[in-house]
Length: 139
Image 1: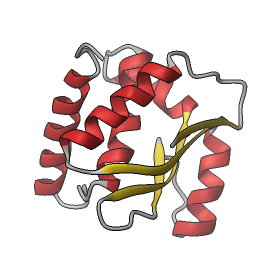
Image 2: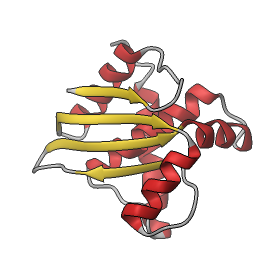
Image 3: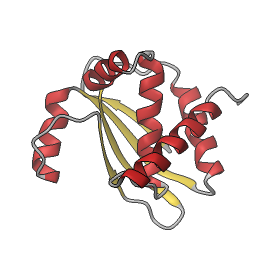
Image 4: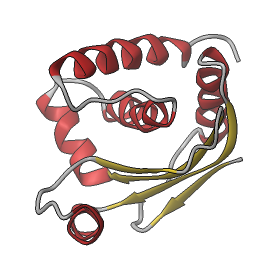
């Protein structure tokens, strides 16, 4: 089950298409969806989570709490809509594209991909690009 919640006035459009795409990505990684919760919030909300749970005092676009069991993906993914909007401008992409990248970034973490080292980050970006292409596959 894929759930979408908002702690701001943001409303995800195309929820059904996003859910189908996440399922397609999961299948492509030989994983199954357990329960994944996406919580859309603002910078301050995510900063507080970063401070309280990760002891980081920085703004970020995404924080994921992975509760995956074996090949069943489970967890909570918090996304700052403010940060995604700013990153979209910085990277010269649409808000929708950047949001999809961040969404799938969290799912890829649940699939076991990391991004702490340079090598891991390169692989993560490659996987993001690969999975973004699946969004346009006939669903």
